[in-house]
Image (cartoon, rainbow, N blue to C red):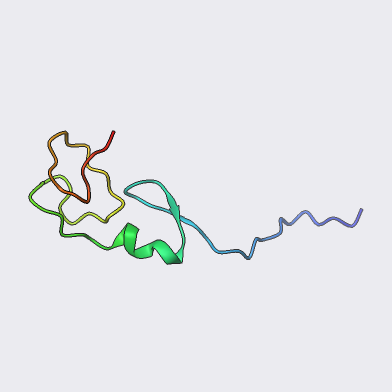
Length: 68
């Protein structure tokens, strides 16, 4: 029984949860989850990243339009 009580650390890439969509993302998707997109006239999703899904029923933005 030579097991240590200290948990081993996983040295894999850390996935961060997005504050806008909740999806975990890695370094390759940082721009999609952090960089604002100039999307159009909707006041709800102004300056939100591409992953953001607008909940406004009448959103006219091609990027953020709610698809639910």
